[in-house]
Length: 571
Image (tube, rainbow, N blue to C red; front, side, top):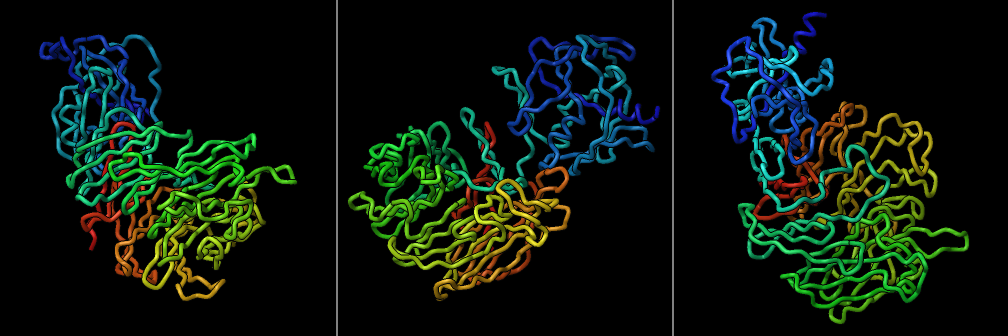
């Protein structure tokens, strides 16, 4: 017990932040006592605020090593902390995940006494001589030297009086500091899978001049443009014309943004959706308006991802809505498909209660053009209860099931999530993940009864284009996760050519939900794996769908104050 307490007492380290009027420690000798007070600084790691026990000693701030190790765990700067009994020293093992150990709580008092420490410190087995203090039988070390040896980035924001730590940027990644704060767009869909999607708010666009633009929907729509080195070159914002953001699309000649507002009063003359057209410099051109009575809508974009596609002078916006109250006293949700003639900016199709491609409930929506026909994909939980693919012209559609979902009609919990839809030369391809449905005893609107762990395999559903109505899709399992130690995220699907695609997903630890490796694999136009599944450490997927630019697959992940671009060279 005594050895365990001594080990726990030794495993604490200092974070050194210089301040004006710092007192030199050169005159402090072993056995001399100085005052230690709790630090008042806020601490951020990769822009997320964390709790670190800290002390101010001689006008410098010191923090616990185990707290820092825990906060960096899973990042490119992760390290483990152990007690090297043979060498009687604290040892930092860089590149290793942190293994949590309990340690006694020091309590909270206003003042402590600190003395110089003689404890040893090893980094990967090599001794490092750093002046240290002991407070209440725990050792605190300066991290100015450790920051370069672990390594991690260390910044002090004197204006905001906070400490900012950043993990090392991995190869083929690029960190960009942002002006102001914004919402994170991390891959929040994993490992806790939603029953339905929300509107996509992060987009990446490959511009015709060799630049890329990151589009973020927050309180306003923010457009930030970067050169080929991911250096920012311009920024602008667009105010919402209606309070709800419904989706963004970069067309061949124009950009389109969908806005909406609620209509709980069921006012037929109230505008519920407005699709605004902009030129490529985001100068407003015109818009088309849709009123409540035409679309029978009380809540636009309800449980919708909201995606668009164009062909010639036709733009299709495939989203969803909550409809006017019906005879049963309920406001039912279903897909909403809007076809727009972009020459006249007018609606071309009927938006009534039940469209010819009706899906209820539709919990995710995709749209692409195949020639002059558009192809729609919906995640349906009721009518039909399937991942439905429909090809048509706005009046008539042929429907095929990409994945039949077991369970009761209308049970929101389906155990399936869509991650992407693309078209190859000969096939329609849907990327998804799915549970082992044989393990479920009952599907309800809230849970999958009998399923102990929501683990899902990564799968493609492939349907030949020449299939007749109600054609059968082939299911290809890319990676099995059910029954393993990991959880796989909803996959991303990226089209490189008509016969080459990339499927990406994130791994998570099943127990701790700690983010793990990025996995990706190439597949051909028939959905068959080409090569082997590849692994990249410390890459993180986000809501932003990856794009192809400059023979690279790229995407970005936002923290509150910085943005990380990730790049995978196409092989």
